[in-house]
Each structure stands twice: as structure tokens, then as C-alpha cells.
Length: 116
Length: 106
Image (cartoon, rainbow over all chains, first blue to last red; front, side, top):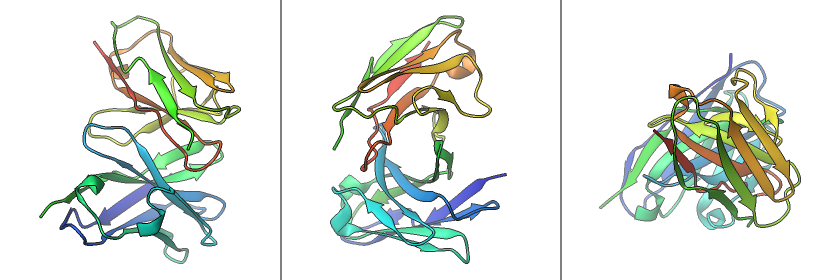
């Protein structure tokens, strides 16, 4: 059975760095891309970026200058860091597995609020 | 970026109805399209991948069609648990953009 569990700080001040980690519970970590997606309150989904087990990344151009996604294959974990956050970064953040079938497994989501 | 446009933005229907949701890409994406269902307060759930392939465990009343720039999600006979928000996503090229969502309500 595949499961993703995520955690991280839920309340940030403007200019701080958002940090989230996602752990994969399942048999095979390699061979997939590990993704981050966010959803502002009441709005649609936004793809943030992804990483594979070798550390190869793809980032959204709109976030690239502030974004770092990293992976720790020994722990089957991957992480999101987004620097210099503003209120516009307030959203539910999801981690997900990107398989040949698409985004087939998702974390539970973490609400991150940016407020002074 | 490829823009994904869903229509309608919201849709009222009844149990047993047949409903169709459309998704249009701003440029051709071949068959690289997924559909998701999202219940309130929950993560999205993959329904359809590669435009028309049913994800394992998803009821057969869900189906997808289309290629190029125009795609459709059809629910053949609505069940109470189908009232949710539906999202399309292109995975042809990064950034893998989503449509704005379609809210299906009673």
C-alpha cells in the first residue's frame, strides 16, 4: 500500500521560508517523480515542481527563483523550501507521487498561512 | 505555460443524471491529460489518466475522451458521492498546469 505523509510549519510571517517534508511509505521510491502542488483557499490547483530519486528537478517558472526541492532517498523523503513568502503563498500544500499514470498518490495536505 | 480551461465552472445535477465536463488546452497536448475528483477538505483523487484510461479502483461510470486540445469527462449516472470538484491537468510539458475546477452540485 502506498502512503504519503507530510509535515511542516503552518504559520509563517512575510519574508520567512516555507519548509515542508513528505515521507513515502511503500516499496519503491526510485522510478517516480515526487511532486508538490498547492491550492490557495477557495481556488484551483497549482503545480509547484517535482524531483526524482537522483535529484533531478523541474520547477514552475513563476516560483523558480524562490524554490528548492530536495530528496533524501535513504529516508524516502522529499522536501519543499520556498523563500521570502508573502500572503500570496497562503495555500494548502500537497505532496504527491507522479507515476506513469499521473499524480496517483497524494499526501493529506498542509495549510500554510502567511500573516504578520 | 499551457492554459487549461474547464467548462462549466459549476454544474447542478441530480442523482442518476449523465453529466459532461469539458477541458480545453491552449495548445495541443496529445493525450497527456488527467482528471481528478476533490471532496471538500480532501486531497484530489486521480480518476482518469492519459485522457481515457480509468485509474484502478475508480468506478466504471467515469470515462474520459479527447485528444489534442479538447477533452471530456463523463459521469454516466451520478451517485451521491460524485458531488465534488473536478480538475483537469495537462502533463504534456512542465509546468503541469491545471484547469480552474468544475464544482458539481445538487
